[in-house]
Each structure stands twice: as C-alpha cells, then as structure tokens.
Length: 325
Image (cartoon, rainbow, N blue to C red):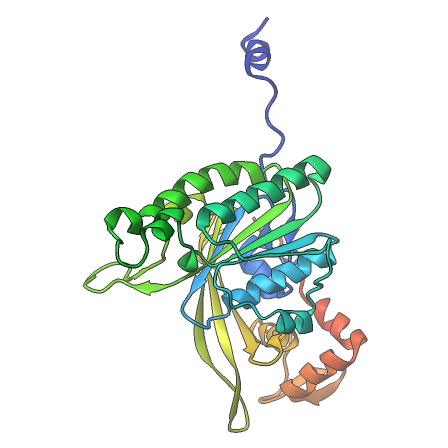
C-alpha cells in the first residue's frame, strides 16, 4: 500500500467543500462584480461577511437587498435586530416577503442568545436541506450586549465586562464559521465605524467587537458616502462607495459606486446606467447617451428602464464579464 492509500485510509478522502458553493446576488451588478469578480455573483454562500461604515451609510439597506434576493431564490431570510430599529414597512416596499416560512425576525437580548439562534437555524437547515439558501443578517455588532454586561448593569461596568463582547465574538465565530460552511447559509454582520482618537499614523478607524471579525470574515465591505444626489434643489439621495477591505473569495480593494434614494432604496437602474457610461459601454455626444439610434439624456434612459422591461433587459445584457487571466 502506497503513502497516498495509507493517508486516505487513516484520515479519509478530502472534504468536498473547498470553495464557495454558490453566490447570493446583491441585485446591484457592479457590486456583485466588486465582491466576486462576476456580475452574476455576489455574497459568498457558506461564508461570513461584514458590512461596516459610518452612520446612515446604507448598511441595513444592502443587507435587506441580500434578504430579498435570498427569497427570490426560494430561500429563507432572517434578521437578528439588536438595534430594534428595522423598518418592516419600508423593507416590504422594497420587496421583502414577511410571511412565515420565508421570513424570520428576532430581537435577541444578548450576543450569546443571538449566536444561539444562528446555530439553531443552521442546524435545522443542514438536517432538512443543506442546499436551501438562507441569509441571516445581524444588525449590528455595535449594538450587541453580552450577558456579562447585562448582569453588571449601568453602575458596575469594568474592564472585564467591556471586553466581554470581543471574547464572545472570538469564541462564537470560531464555531459558527465551521457550521455555516456545510450549508448554503450566508451570514452577514453589520457594524459601525468608530474614530480612534490619538492615532497619529495608520488606520484611524475601528469597529466594535474586537478583532475576531477581521480574522473570521471571508468578506469585509466598507461603505462610505461620496456625494449628494439632487432633483433640482432637493436632495433625494446619496452616492455610496462600497470597497472590499478584505476578500478571500476574490481580489480585495475593489470599489463600486452606487446610487441610494431616500425613498426607494438603491436606485438600481441609475446605478447600472452610470456604470455602463463610466466604462464607455454606453456612449454619445456630450450630455447625451446614444441608445436605439437616438440621443437621450441619462435621466430619460433611466426612466425607460424602470417602465419598460424590454429596455431594462437590453441594458442588463450589456453586463458581460471579461475573461480574466
């Protein structure tokens, strides 16, 4: 018996899950590309991802889009709302289905309870159908409170309880990453950006929860505001820059600029057309886009995409992945 046969006999065949099993679209094709290297990609299933940024940078909006896309694939969307600030009515307007069997919503009291819920969901899904897409969004790490902090109360806080979240995140993620890797669960943590006063050189930002997420997350996306979007004199939205700070499923430090509307969420059509214009796929004379042999303003073409499914499908067909070497 050769060495190879002896190894197989001793430790068994190679485990099958050596790569991402599937991808969960964000619904924003340029963001899919930045994350996974392909327009029909997105968040890696069976992995932990983190979305972080400053206040009102659209973290919950991107997570909501992931939940909606999960339901479109016939899966289950789950939200653990530690912030107690989720707007269900707004999410429903964006397309989230909230009927039982498709939607799970919990408000855990402690971080330990939250991780317990995640483990139970993964365990049940793995036993029932490990290929069923499930997305769990945790909003947010910054709002998590450990049992030790709850027991200490307001007046008895000490260094030990202040560090308890870091310890909880480290020990829990160590277990959870292994569990979800055997399923089609996409686990997305939301987090906030905090300033580190007194830091003269290097990264002046930090995120609550310690360093565990930096190690265990396969994907870390930073969101930041880049500019205002106006309709006349009225500010109706913002430009948001998404940058992959860590990426173990594709190249890191890729960026994507998308448009966010205060009323309707991510402006998909405007984002897609702006991307095609920036890449020189849609062209025309200054101030116009040449489409169907006619000069059109960008706002006009965006409106056509929203109102005409044929036009929208034609625009989407322009997103073709290059062959990378």
